[in-house]
Amino acid sequence: MAVDIVTGVLGAVKEKRLRSRTAWWGYARKIGVLSAIILTNVIDIILGINGALALMTVLFYLGNEGVSILENLSQLGVKVPSFIKDRFSFFINI
Image (cartoon, rainbow, N blue to C red; front, side, top):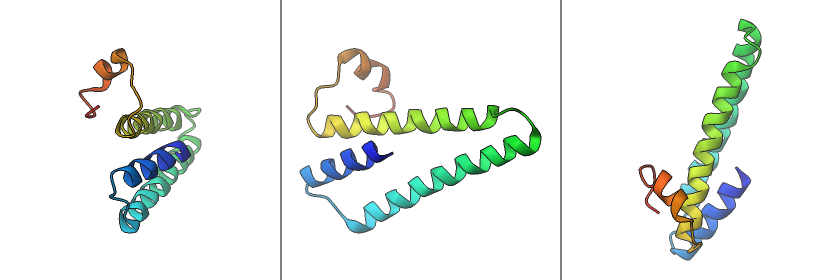
């Protein structure tokens, strides 16, 4: 999440669209993600399913963060390998 935040802020600075309100909502979403992970962990404990739900939730958000980081790096002008572009071009515009 920290890498996503840093690359997002750098991208916003580069594009001259850094807005505190937009950043604040982004941070609030990150807190929501952490809350969702904590909640799924509690549900796992209650249901006794040995962390399956929490693992799926973490993997989903890990993938989501990865795609966001790729998008931010592309926005910053970092060359993204073509095999990665091909796989993720459906999700993001890189």
